Length: 362
Image (cartoon, helix red, strand yellow):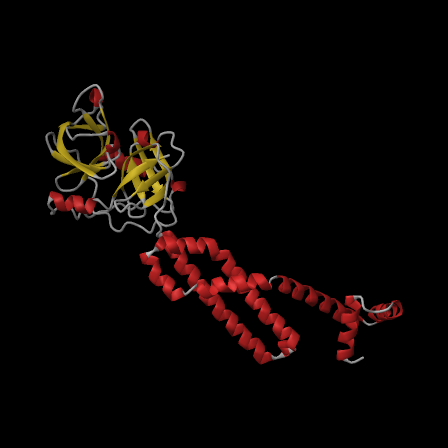
């Protein structure tokens, strides 16, 4: 039996067009001839695929219309101008684009099979190159739109409370006060540009009121070199100090002096300072005139007007050393060069703003 005759017989068999005698004879032939049986099974599978393809024709038309509207080069230009529109388009049509590409590939394969060109080596090569180019185009589109998603501002519900934190290392270790994050379900930090990052609490010391966060957000790419260092000797009485933090939605600067080298009830781990402290200032850095970190702002004594406290930098450094090793990918590397030293106070504050965060507690 020639191929054309066999193909016709297979189609009649599967379509139920054979009379009972023909069907019995053909089934007997399938039993005796493995090649015929294989041809029947392959043709049956192929007809099933074509049926699925037929059912998707209308969907293909609609998806191809969406695909035709997408211009990768235009999207790149639009990302910086109208990121929200790009994000919405991607979220709405990402899966549809993938399906459209799959249908297009299936259509090419089906056409080649029907026309008998599947055995042509050059056709295989051409098809392989075409598919590789399509995959590269889709991959580039994925990459560009994923970058747009990363830079889309995070929208969060109203937070329970907020305070301040400041960077310890360029890879996202943040110091704040323990009472700020106590009983928090989740903690985020927001930089001066308004970008919000998810964090993980990796160290706490309730007695000294200090906590250390680690920015765990996948969109975080680092801070660059920290411009300040930590003072490792005790400050002097009456020394000029200042803070920069977020007692409100916008950053605030306040200055004052070290009024006592001891904290409440003679506690030697804290300074007492005359810097005005508001609720949101907790966790802010306390700096000297040269831009060294001398402490971490903790709280004010509610019973005594003008009495405010800050944890001394020695104990903050001790907290950094006590971070559990399983919470870190590598040992914290603190800055060893203070680039604030020879700057005016105004210039110091301008450089500080990229390293001091609003801490949002949920």
